[in-house]
Length: 394
Image (cartoon, rainbow, N blue to C red; front, side, top):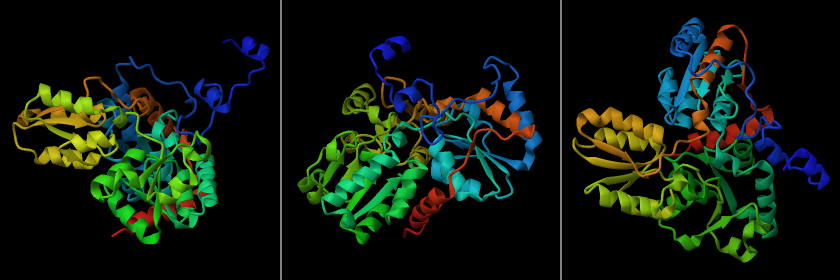
């Protein structure tokens, strides 16, 4: 539909529609905004040399973080690699680095800004590198959810627990309401702590990690869990359902891990006899229940490091990492395949490519600060409070 036709029908596009069409900008959104500047051509044969030269010119002033799901062309320039929280802590441990270039996504760069000093500047090479999961819970939606819990008479019994894969706004909400952050590695410890503080948990924004931790690891039943849908009145739940639940799961998911199905597991077992299925806890509950091993990104890497030569593995996580691990362990005779037949990268993570990294590094080397991610002080205060509660977990 053209703009003229829209005007004739007196239809006003929503802010979200305009954002998705690239006609508006929202720096606080995980969907990102237009990237300023003139990017080098992706066909430039000198991109690797240019990135290396700019990084060498910056010296100790720059510290490059590379998330496990990044492309190989980018990860080769990372000073450290890891998951989102490990990288944010690594950045905080390098106070001499003036610039933290985070090759990851928006919420990760926010976490790095929260944990680093005011003197350090966090840069995201492409502002459009966001996270669909983090976008599934906005500050306004979560505030409305809390009103629903208040009207049901249970808000005082509820402790929010937010996954690291959430925006700074959601982390701040969590801190302000007495909750904590968790990672996929310590979700059980975080929930144990939360149930010591209250009778119920509001788990944001990934329903699968919350459900898998509660049911698989802590012995709760599926009936103890309800799903709050922010797009339905009262979350699509009655007050009675909310009062009866122990786990109130936000209706969010990872677009990569959520695609794996029970059919994927059954199919790979038929194709590769003796295969070990190893999946991330962001996968659906039925996938996790059918897998041989379940764990975080770091767990997956360590499991494959410890695996015997000749063993076969089907991995349910992001393809860049799976492919990198397959190449790494092939000389040891370990067969590693992607769990699903359909290739699936994290599309937003893959926005950080070599042209964007070169542009960011060269800009910094020339004294121009670009794409800075900066969390406002009030948000930072409450978000850091929630993160500190996580760090204090036993």
